[in-house]
Amino acid sequence: MTDRTEATISEADRIDAQVIWDFHQMGHKLRPCSAAITLGSLDLGVASTTADLYHAGMFPLVVFTGDTSAATKERFPRGEAIHYREHALSNGVPEEAILLEPKASNTGQNIGFSREVLENAGIAVTTILLISMPYMQRRAYATCRKLWPEVEPVCVSPTLSFDEYAKTHDDEKQFIDMLMGDMERVMKYPARGFAIAQHVPERARDAFDRLRARGYDTSPAYLTVPRS
Image (cartoon, rainbow, N blue to C red; front, top):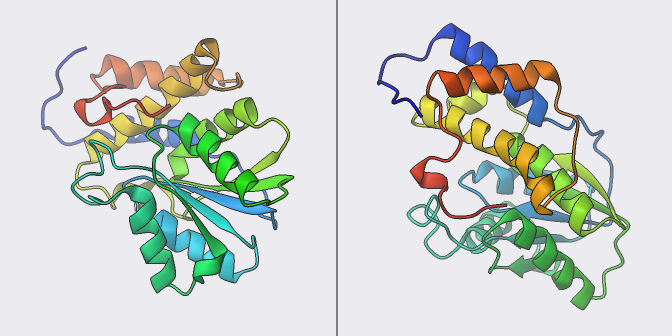
């Protein structure tokens, strides 16, 4: 892997990153589901979106899932799910509409542990609303289809454009690294049994290869904690 300098990100970098961003979007039509699973992350906006969707009647019950990680321990020291729950409560989601899953340390556990929580609560699930960061949609979908094939996942995220979402990160280079990391997981995890295989358009593969050749990292230090 070549080292990157702190030079300003080029327009070519942004164009290729936009292609990868677009690939990660599932484009699902929002509709009411049996329940929701909100996947913990650095982005508290995902919890805000969850609250908005609850008030819009998109689900009757949500599982907030996620322990803390190397990437989130400073911002969410008591765990992603706990901080998300508190934020949802402050945005008017009632306690009785929230279940907590505070142990998951990767996406497979997010799905598997949340499934157990819903089953233990006696909730019949045929459709599940997966609420995540925008560039995590495709990986969340593929993981859910692998681990819980009986349900139909519907993916949704905060409705921000690539440029708008990049501005929520202090380091745009790091943001593009994170897009790259999720795409590599989408491509490699099916062979490891973590997710279903999905078609990756040549345009997206080419953009990924160009960014990697320019030194963008698919496994930077802040992503070393396994998050399948």
